[in-house]
Image (tube, rainbow, N blue to C red; front, side, top):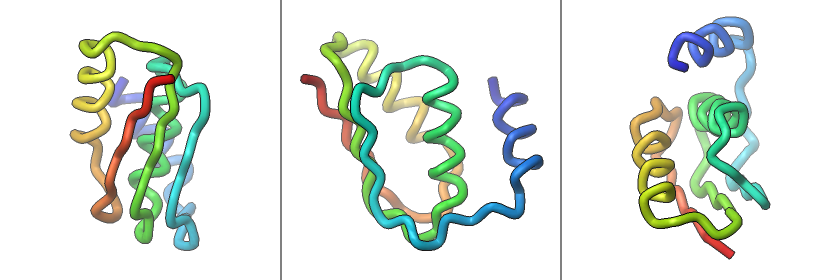
Length: 86
């Protein structure tokens, strides 16, 4: 998984999302492509302050695991990550 992420970062190393302050994704799931997308955004957004992930009902273990993964990702700025189940 880290290998895929690093390949994507290298391939798009010129991309910076300087104007992105907040990101909200509805119907977020814990699938690898979605996680990779959020990791990329976190690494490439120096002014990002808040990420809100709206998920369908997930159990607390899955939510906790998702947060652990996202909190370990290198970030371009200090950012608050909020996961909301509905």
